[in-house]
Length: 118
Image (cartoon, rainbow, N blue to C red; front, side, top):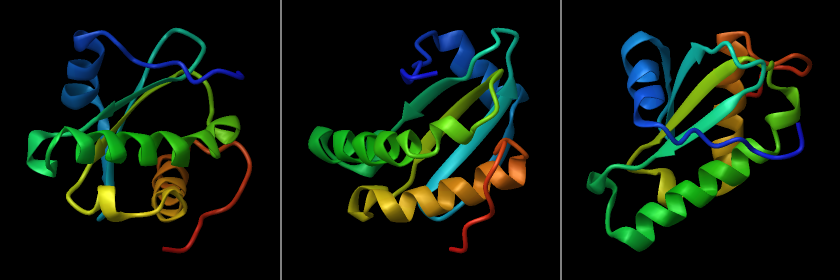
């Protein structure tokens, strides 16, 4: 799929938090839950604890860019929610991508590729 499909409905986020499996790293938390759509939806959240609006927006941009490089390897049919952490806004997207790749590999969602070292 060429375009990143964003998760927009609150109930989808709540379902991921409640029933999904979580994978934690110092830069990002990943919640994974299966959907019946046949394609992967991605949601990105940032808490007000992260900082002001500019800082939160940067955290979302960094996460989005990191995922964009991995999107073609991710198995379809899942809802993914990425939650930024305190160190996310200061990190480069390549660092976040390494953590994300490790989480997705652990979750068994990478079709091809290998585990990245953090």
